[in-house]
Length: 219
Image (tube, rainbow, N blue to C red; front, side, top):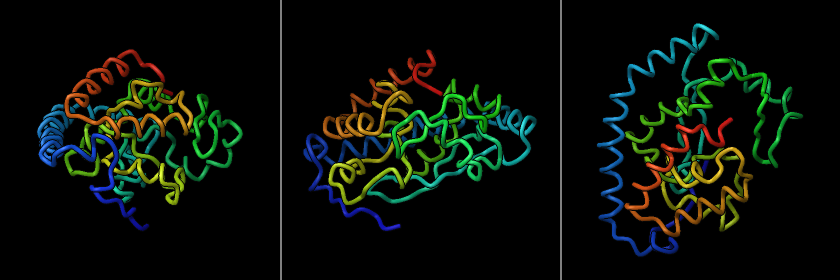
């Protein structure tokens, strides 16, 4: 998969005007805070992975190809919330889709396990992405990493979304989450890119934490 040719000097808004030192600070923050959070979460992850395997034997981790900075693909990690052969059963549940294509969202997806429903409701299935943050594929804050088939990479607005690393937390999570359609989510991502600042990242981390605790918009 070819990466998007998107130069720093072509970025819009405050992202274009920001000094590289702010992005260095953002990366340092990701490594330090993400590394500490991952270390603290290890025991919780072990317990959750055991619960997943007890209910549904198989690898408790799920890898999926997503698009990152400048459209470069990477393997995003999650705790598995579905039965092991869920991808092969996609055609069986297409009629349950509640979202406008290219998105797929179903509140009553039969492929989701009981443990998986708890993980999704609490967003604990996202914890392994702390490893993606430390590695450098993702940031603690940014647009959500999306599937390649959801984007038309010839569309300038779609391309512009990849001007910054995807994030574990962000504006999407505090603005509706699963209730948003594709166009709404894209507009929110571009708004984040256009008005990015390190201080806004700190606010979004706190707001995302509150939304996750209240279980708002997740399914």
